[in-house]
Each structure stands twice: as C-alpha cells, then as structure tokens.
Length: 432
Image (tube, rainbow, N blue to C red; front, top):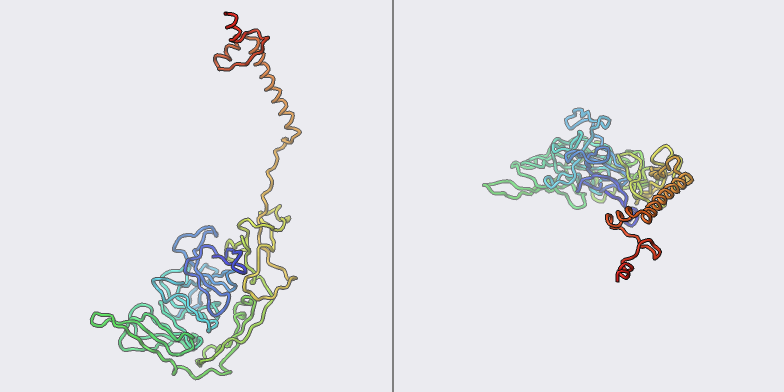
C-alpha cells in the first residue's frame, strides 16, 4: 500500500503485504482506516496465506496499530486476549462469500463502527460481531455469530440480523451497546438478504428484505421495522455530552481536535432529523503522529523508525554514527502527512529516521602502493625483454633453432639483404 504526498505525487510505502479489497476507510473521521495484512517473518515475507491480522491507523497510514480485543465477550466471559501475549482482534474486510458482514460505518455517526471477526492470533472464519463506540480505540462483542448491521438516527440505534439461515428476530441497541434487545418481527421465518435504512441514516425505520420457500418456490419478502416507540423521547441538553476522539487516542487526529455531541452511555433518547453532532475543532501543534515516511523510506516492522529502502538524491551528509553503525539518523526520512492541518513550528524537533551509511572504500592491501609496485613492474619488463633478446639472437645465429622456429612453429622473421641467408628470389637468380 502506497500513500502520496500533495497532488498524488511522490508515493511512499505505507504498508507491506496488505490484502486486496481489505482496505477500508472509516467514514465518520478523516485519517482512520482499517486493513488486513499477511503476517510476516521479521518483515521480509509472509508466513503463509492463512496467517492474517487486522490493523488500524489514526493518521492516514503513517503508523499502523494492532487492535486490542475486548476484555469480555458477549456472554461476559473473560477473553484473556492481550497484545502482550500476541492476541488481538481481527476484523473482516469485504468478502465475496459474505458480502454484507464487512467493516461498516456511516458518515454521520462519529465513533461508531460495526464489524465481524474474531479475537486470537489470526483472522479465521469462525467470526462474531463487534462494535466500537469511540472510533476504533475500544471494541465490544455484541453477539456471537455473523450479523448484517445497519445504523439509524445518526447512530442512536444499531440493528443486527443473522446473516445465514431463516430468522424471525433481530437484535438491536438504542443505548450505545448498554444492552442488546431482541425484536421478533414475524411469525413465519425467512432468509434475510439485507437490512437498509434511508440514505441519510437519520430514520428509526428499517427495511428487511429476503425470501422464504413456499411450495418449493422462493417467495420474496419485505418487512418494515419501526423503532419509534423504543425511545424515551428526543435528546435534550442533559442527555448529551461533548466527546472528542482526541480524548480516546491521546493525540489529535490529522492535526485537529474535533468535538462532537453524543448521548451519555445508557440513554435511549433519539436525535431526530436535522441533528448535527459536530461542535467544532481546534488545530493542534504538529507532533510525531503528523509525520509519515518519505519517499523511498518505510517501517520494516510496526512501530519501527522510517528506514531507507532505495536510492534518494540530495540526502544530508553522513554523520559520525556511520563509524559504528550501518545507518545514521536524519529528519530527511520523514515528511508531513498530506491532509493534516497541524500547526508546524519550525523550532519544534522533527522525528528522525534511518539513512543507510555509504559503503566504505575498498581498503588498499598493505605494501601495494605505487612506490612499491613500480620496481616490480620494471623487473618484469626487463626479464621479458631479456628472454626476447635471447630468442632473437638464437634465431639469428643458430641454424637448428631457426629451423625449429620456422618449420615447426610456422614462424619466420624477415631478414635484411646483408643476412647470412639468401631470399628465395636470390637463390632463383643464382640458379639461373
């Protein structure tokens, strides 16, 4: 997965080995995404196709985090699943065989997420249904099994319907998960294909549609669910609190501390049409959370410093760190995340990543300087010259040696007119 700087240029590597179609944007807050990734062996290659884990980011992919599992399941049993022992929560992205149980959120219900998955050491098919009410920071198990979710009235109600098999009942919560209640909607069960609410997600009425088998034929079924009478009334001032994702995450998200109105946990009032949850936002000073790896840099493992992976022009000169390490630290490894609105103070220190030290020059072997090499070269030249001169003299003076060179090796040296031997033309003329 790659992320660009401004104007879709200068892409940097945000995450290795993520799974196609499993990358999902959280629709209610900028900068929050979920994805699934093949588990790697020290960041180099995946273990196998079955080892998959879920990750969440709160700063547009600059830093990815493993998801903490709930402390208790929907039956109030301890999960004993902790990040310290390698156990975490894993959530399904889009699956063609389960098209309605992927990670789900709506744009006007800040903090609310619904997904199916499991806790353990990797993602598997035996999934349950989980809900987060605070933007993915904490999760609770709503029910065992896969359920198709829908959200109404700006998040005041969540309805779950069993994904597979014929049903006559749905589960719902209109008090932010404080309790999940059953709602029986028919005396004749049918197989529900999906559940929908109006396009603005501001209604408390839902539509279920599917089919039942009658006389060997599939008969389409549509049912309306009306939850108007399940509320205590419309929310007023005493029912609402000001909530900010910054309070949950301990840091501003994309450089801003946004605030929203939401109900106190356990209240069952409705928001009603025209409700606006957003209160306002304050820009924050830039911190390490507002920086991502620059081009040709990436994090070898989750939480690692940004480390150089390929050639980058105009890098700062190496420091003394290269005398004892393969890398030296520099601010050039990071850049500001595109889209953050944080306030950049030039005097604030920037995070430093790792740049590869240049390869040291090949050391010259001891005693092989030019002053030592030249005499050796001269000796070799003199020796070769002496051998050549000896061969030439023998060729000129020794008839047997000359005959050997000429006839055995096929080698002949042209001789001058004052030679002791006559040329072929001279011999022919004397004969004539």
